[in-house]
Length: 292
Image 1 (cartoon, rainbow, N blue to C red):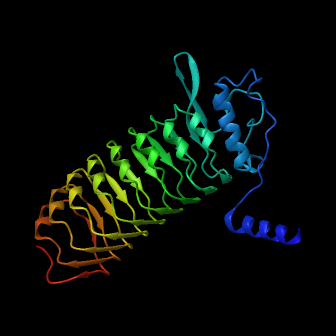
Image 2 (image 1 turned 90 degrees about the vertical axis):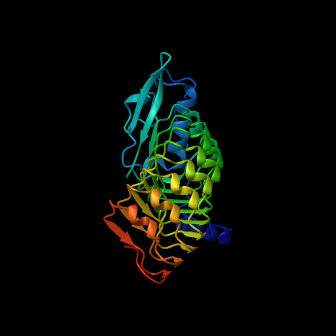
Image 3 (image 1 turned 90 degrees about the horizontal axis):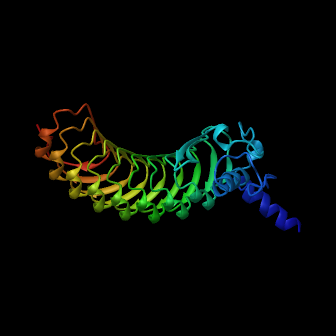
């Protein structure tokens, strides 16, 4: 028994495993919650799985009160019924895991849970959030792969998962995110190649995946990203040559490819980059001459 206790304490300290806190509210019998029972229960699950009693602000989370007036929650009316539309609890001392049952908030437009101590994986079940436009869970301790089911998020525009411990490749199925404007995934452990299918992201403005473990080449197919303004793949393991087809990036102003294994020369075709302000390509194996 002592050995089991020591192992449990070790895992708790290392991985942020927290005790589940059981809420006392019964959503099925509550009369003042003002949202569907399924959404009330999903929010209680989040409270329980992230040590809600220790939240910086958890007022009325476990009481029969109007969900739509609680801290960090805004609702919107759909067919005469209030539904949770935005959930924002950054810097709120959430400690624990994200419950799959939040998939019940299927009218979600934005989720902001950055700068907490959330652990474990991103739930595959959240693929139900087909209307979400803004997602921010940066600066946590989230691990594991990115869910392929989230390809259903065809309205997503801002996606921020930087400074976690996410692994595995970027899902090629996310090529459906054709409204994507800002993508931050820097400072994780993502690997393998950059998906060629993401050439469909023609509206992308900011793309940052620096400080990961990506390998192989920069996709020539991404020449379609003609709106891109900032691009960062620094400190990875990318190699081979720079795509001449990216000469189409005439709006690029900041470009970071330093700290890779890229070879050969800077393409002379990139002379079309007349808006460039910052360009970093140090710590590679580029040779010969600089394009003029």
